[in-house]
Image (cartoon, rainbow over all chains, first blue to last red; front, side, top):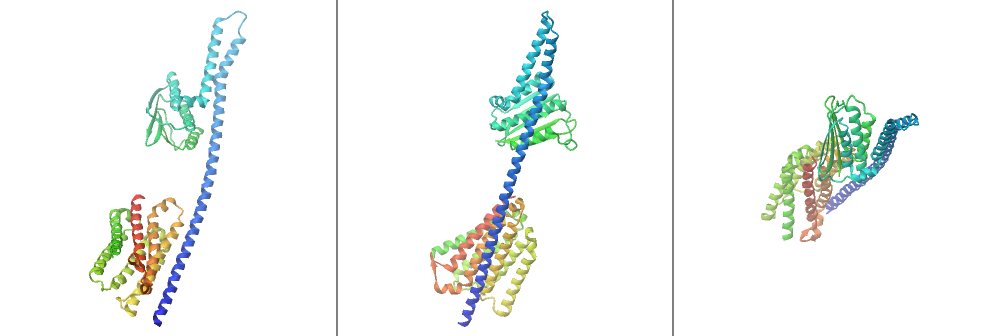
Length: 255
Length: 220
């Protein structure tokens, strides 16, 4: 009987210790869990602020770039044409010179046309009304007309919508890429494809220009802008290029 | 009696399910050093099946010796399992020492104190305490991980540890007080309470094991 009582007391003591250990472990684990949860929350907040800042910087950069583009267009095209018109007006004598008047008329028409193009390329409503695909098609058709490049266009018939904001940004990216091809690539052919793949809209622009070495070429404003814009619309951007082998740019946007 | 048979059948079926899942996903188990659980589940399943037949045909026969051998065996299995997990490296020595101590205690008790055919509550309680400690050590290490990939990779072991932390303390405590509780014969659904608790919790633990094995396959 005595032995049994001692045994029971010992069992109770050991069991209590066991339970105590479990309680302490549970409390400690809960504390670790809370600590981790708070750290994660703080990290999430920090990342959110960082993302907002990056977004703001990107927007400012894009705005700056647009202003530069407007300034260049006014200075290089419209400004030049209007200067020529002014020159012709100054040299216009008292006698009606039909040839000069016709030339001025043509120059004014060009100025108006350039202004319209500039206005269309900047107006987001035009992109939204016709859709980003048609806007890109128009852009490429204009290039085709100049006979500088052959253009190949392949577009899936039922391309899903990517939303207003993404459409505008994607179109701006296309403009940037096409401008880069015209300025630097010396390409004779451009192929544009837009397709739906695994729940994403995949857009690719391939040229047969001189290409570049991604490792040796430092990231210029153009590439940086593309990357920023891709980040803004949560798109995957893949740039493949080699000297002499053209450039392949693929943008994949989750629908 | 019917309830007892059903519960026992569920219990054996859950162990078998664990064993089948473990064998099916053995390659995934190997990447997480969990292959040893195949041996553990196989031994447990064979032992429980034989003991069921024993209880059925020779009810007066004592099964104490079987559990006296099974207890150090399961302690070694879990000591090997947890000490081999890479994130448990700082705890490896402690786990091996604990397992060594437990083996020594078993040897001393059964060689010098009393026969292996007699029940020893302290050893039962110690086994529960040690295996639960291993699982808690793992959970501590896991919750200190900073790498989401690693966290995801070791998630199956969290399920195993959760099962252990719930089953072993309750089963050890009810086993220790078996002698005293049996005097009151508290019956729940035709089952003695001190037998019902470990049985139900072991069903939960082996289900956790099966789910953990499935997660091993799912989280490549």
